[in-house]
View (cartoon, rainbow, N blue to C red):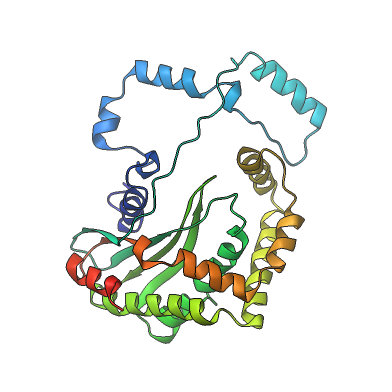
Length: 293
């Protein structure tokens, strides 16, 4: 089903290229070959190796009582074997030149996905990168959305996103458009990256990005499910609960110069990967665009 949906399949192509040489490159769903070769014994071994107390965190949020949850957990989870702590994997090194993967298809839309090597969830630059994402493609007021869709009508959709792991990450751009507009759209994207690197955001633009980030987070945390997710990811990543207000305070302190600095570090064409599904320019044509001045 994912392969039949170009907007999803292009993300798998991009992930495989971004993290080439690492287990992070593998598709979550597996492949026809890997799924067809899994045995009952494989499942039992995986269960014993990974589903134990050493890699389990239990969180609860909402109308719950702490003591009742503790009793419930002890009764149902108290017999879990201890097992080893989760093993940390080493991310692949940064590449030195752009990498491109193309899957040609007859389709009404061409799907593009770009990634640059970003920062991990513990990197002190993560707050500036988070606001860089909002400024460039995090909402309908962002630079790429306004330039590509609203002003020029070059694409049907465009957005940025962040992939943050404990010690590595990626800054990603996704868009759907006519194949004939690919080169022009990519040229505008690269120019916007150069512009924010050279001049940074205005004070008003930066404040709007910060207010948007804090506001959407506060609204999301009104849901118990989001609160529960926050608790679990915080414990898994940092080993402690990080209060949201600490994050909000750090976002408010990000300066325009910090944005410029992380933009110059992250939006580096040498670490660019691109996935394309549909009709469009050749790989050689795209490489000349990325390697040009």
